[in-house]
Image (spheres, rainbow, N blue to C red):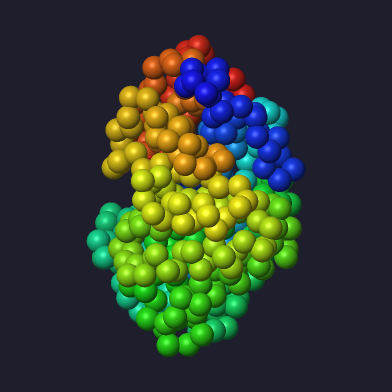
Length: 374
Ligand SMILES: Cc1cc2nc3c(=O)[nH]c(=O)nc-3n(C[C@H](O)[C@H](O)[C@H](O)COP(=O)(O)O)c2cc1C
């Protein structure tokens, strides 16, 4: 097959469970800190997501399933009725604009601060996040988290399941369990952050236990066909160290394989690495891959298209892009036609609130993006 845009499978339809995707480009989850102070999504967020309804699938920014899991100021929650109603506005706006959207659910674990959540953060082991954390009064040292009890571990799996139920009730097409990027579930997987000596720590089988319990609880609540999971082997963000990722992730994928999940979403996917092939071999279901496009802000001139094609050739079914979707509400159309891309602007990326650098990125037409909820 040539790589002319028209012949490119990235722009061909695909199925994901019961969803018909018009293309294989997924908007990656991106926290933008625009929720109200109580974690409720305002109408502005519905407008932002509806602008991007041309994506094959949208994965929302992280929604927090319990107050203690709050990461940074103005992240979204999915544990109060008011929050559920705010999310409903997003699901409705995206569906009205012809899109498909799943909600990502994330617990911060040690990536948290009493000044952000009002509670002391918890984690598999009392090891602080290096490098500090954003709070309302600026960047602060992250506290040493309290080690979770077995009862808390069970309650957290139940909180994920309840959040998933709320997400589906709010109208989402499914949920993505966030087990990547150094948040609570990843903290359990990684031996640098998990020093437990009970059945949740030590061996690979023990360290994958909590993630499996969460995924099983969510799938039992809303159906496996509506449940996805995000993983990021090799990503050291949020101070993660993994000495045995080559053993752990294949074991995790083997345990996930029989559950019939909607998809596995690989953040930090590099088709040149043995890890990608190892995961593709063990996961026969839908694989979403998020290419490594380099550090924050600038995106490659092609928006990641060349890397996306490499991943499809290496076996990815769908490809997710983050920053390119952030800056280009009509990204799929731009990539399909080879049109130039808006660069990502630093202003308004996180922690500022408001439409600046959020809903004001222009479309090709230069007019209000099609699908705007306004
Ligand atoms: C502003 C911003 C916020 C992000 N928030 C999340 C998040 O909430 N959940 C998540 O899994 N990844 C998050 N990510 C990571 C993205 O999903 C993606 O993996 C990363 O941006 C790399 O993809 P890209 O090179 O296409 O941008 C975030 C990235 C950015 C730039």
